[in-house]
Length: 238
Image: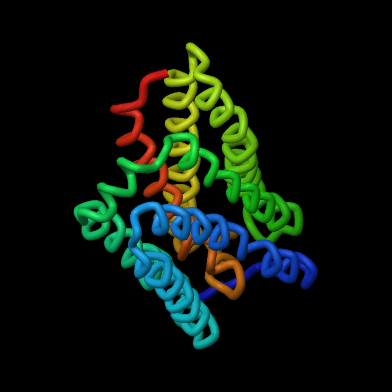
C-alpha cells in the first residue's frame, strides 16, 4: 500500500530550506579549499566540489522522477542515496592516503566547528510543527542537531583555550552528536516500517524534493565527521 505523504509543509518552509541548505556544502567546501592550499593539492577542492554538484544533481533527478515515492523498507531515498554515499566514505575514502593526511593536518577544533551546519536541524522541528513528520521524531532529531551545532562553538573554544577539561568535553560532545544522528537514521527506518504495517505517519516527506537532500547528505557526512574527530582525539592532548 502506498500512502506517500500525509501532509506537506507550507511552501515558505521549502523555500527557506533551499536558501539554507547550501550552508553545509559551503562550510565543507571552504574547509577543503584551505586544507588543499596547505597540502598543495589543487585538485582536491575541485574534486570535492564536482562530487557535491554531481551528487546533488543525482539526488534531485531521482526525486523529480519519483524514485523515492513508493513507501518501502528501507526507504527508497536511503537505498538510492544514503547507502551508496556512506559506502563511498567509510569503505573507500577512509582508506585513502589523502584522507589520513587531511585528518593528521587538521586541528580537532576545525572538525568540531564544521558541525555548526547542523543548525539546519530546525527544519525537522518545522516539519513536525506542520504535521509533515511525526512530532516526537521531528523534535528529538531537530533539537539534538541544534544542541550539537550550538555546543560545537563552546567545545571548539575550550580546545583552543586548552582548558583542562577540553579533551573529555570533546569526547562527550562527539558521543552525543553521534548518538543523535544514529537515532535520527534508525528511527526514520523504524517509522517507515511501522508506516508500512499500520498506515501511520512515516517520514515520507524526506523522500520529496527538497527535503530528500537531508537523508541523502546528512547522515553519512555527519557520521564521517564524528568518526574523524574520534580518530583525531586519539592524538589530541588538552
